[in-house]
Length: 421
Length: 131
Ligand SMILES: Cc1ncc(COP(=O)(O)O)c(C=O)c1O
Image (tube, rainbow over all chains, first blue to last red; front, side, top):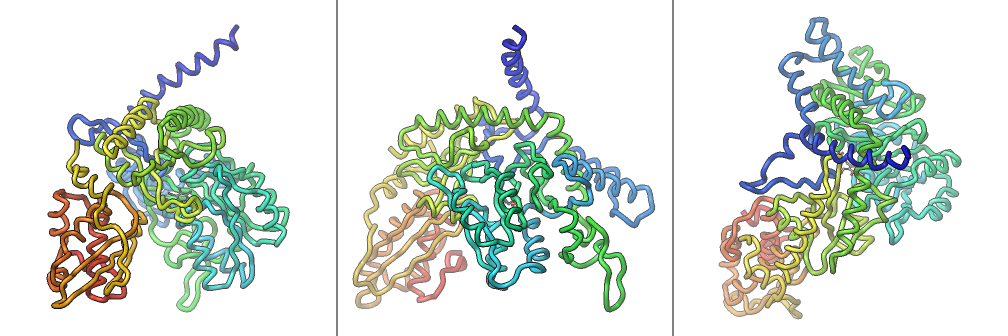
C-alpha cells in the first residue's frame, strides 16, 4: 500500500516545489512588456539567477570587498575565505578529490583553451591524433583548429547518427589509431544528447588517451561525479547553473595539473619572481594569474548551495518530465521537425525547424508573447551543416520550467504558422 | 499582430519578384550574416550611363533579410549606380516600413551590404557600408 502511494506523493510534492522554486528567481516575475509575462525557455544559453546568488554577490560588495590572498586585514581575510569556500563547494559538488583540483576560469571556453595552451602544447606534436565529435560547441573545436595550424596535430570526429547519437562503432575504429586526446561534450547544447561519458572515457584510457569532458550542459542538470566518470579534465561554466557570468571552472587530475606548464603569467600564479625568472605557485593558484572574479566566484559557490538545496536528482527528474511532455506536444505540430534523440536519451533541449519559416522569424514572433527561445546555429555550425540546415529554433528547460510554459510555446508556434500561412 | 511582420514583408518573403540569378551580369557579389547564416547573392546588369537595367537576388534566410532584399532590388532597377552607392540604412528601413533592434537590423541590411560591396567593387562587404 505504502509503496503504491509513494509516487503520487512525490508528484504532488514536486509540483508544489516548482512554484516555490520560481519564487526564488526574481526575473521570472517580470513582464517583457505590459501585460506580457516572461516565458524563459533559453536556459541552455544561460540560466536565470536565484536571489540567493544575487544576494551573495551583493553582500560581498557591500560588506567584504577586498582583494584576496596576501592581505592581512579583516576584509581581505573575509574575501579570501568566501572565495576559497566557494571552491570547496564546487569541488564537493562534482566530487573532486580536493579543491586544489578546481581552477577558476572565466567559463567553459577558457577552461578548454587552458588545456589547449598548456597540457596540449606541452604534450602534442605533429601527427598526434585528437578525437572530437561532430556535435561539439565551437569552444571545443576552434582551440584544436588553432593547435592544428600551429602544430600539425590531426583531428578526427566521431560522427553523429541521424537520431542524434554518437556513432560508437566509429569511435572504436578511431581509437585503434592511438589518439593522444579525446575531447567531447557530455551533453549536446542542440540535440540534448547525453553521451555515455563513462564508457567513452574508459575506452579512451584503454588506448592511453587523455580525456576532456565538456560538462557545460551536464553539470547544471545532472549529478556529475568526476571520479566516477574517471575524466582527466572537466570544463564547465557557472552561468549555466544558476551562477553569474564571468566565472567557470576546470577540474583536472592532480598529476596532470601538477605536470602542466602555467597558463597566463602574472601575480598570484607565482611562488617567487626574480628579474629574469619565476617559480610557479602550487595548485590551484598556478593557473590563476591576476585578480580573479571574486564576487563571481562567491556567486558560483552560492549557486552550488542553491542547486544542492533543491537536489540534482529532483532537478533531473523534473526536467525529464517537462522534456518528455514538450517533445510529445511539439511532435504533434505539422511541419515541425525535431532534432536529437528521444526524451530518455536527452536533457531539456528541444531544437526544431518549421517548414518554410526561418528560425529567426519563429523566435521573433514568439518574443511578442514574451516567449524567449534562441534561434541560430547555437555555436554548433558543423552540427547544423551535418543535418543540412543553417539554423534551428531551440527551446530549453530548467528547474523552474513548467508544463504551462510548454503549452504557451506550442500556442505560440501555431501563431507563427498562421502568420506565415 | 505586429509591425515587424507586416503583410508586405510576409508577401515579399513568400513571393519575391526578384529572386534569381542573372547570366550574364556586370556585377555580382555574395555574403553571409555570420550570426545566423543568412546568405544573399546579388547580380546586376548595368547599361549606358551607368544605369542599373536589371537586378536579381538569391539566397536564404529569415523573412526580414529576404523581404528587404526583394524590396531593395525593386528600388534600384532603373537607377544610376551613383545613386545606388548612396543608399544607406535608413533607406532600407523606409522600404521595410519598420523599426528594428540591433540583431534584426543585421538581417535587414545584409542585402544592402552585399549590393554596395558589389557596386564599389570591393573584395569584402563591411558593416561600414551600411551606416
Ligand atoms: C556544450 C557547450 N560547451 C561549451 C559552451 C561554452 O560555454 P561558455 O560560453 O560559458 O564558455 C557551451 C555554451 O553554450 C555549451 O553549451
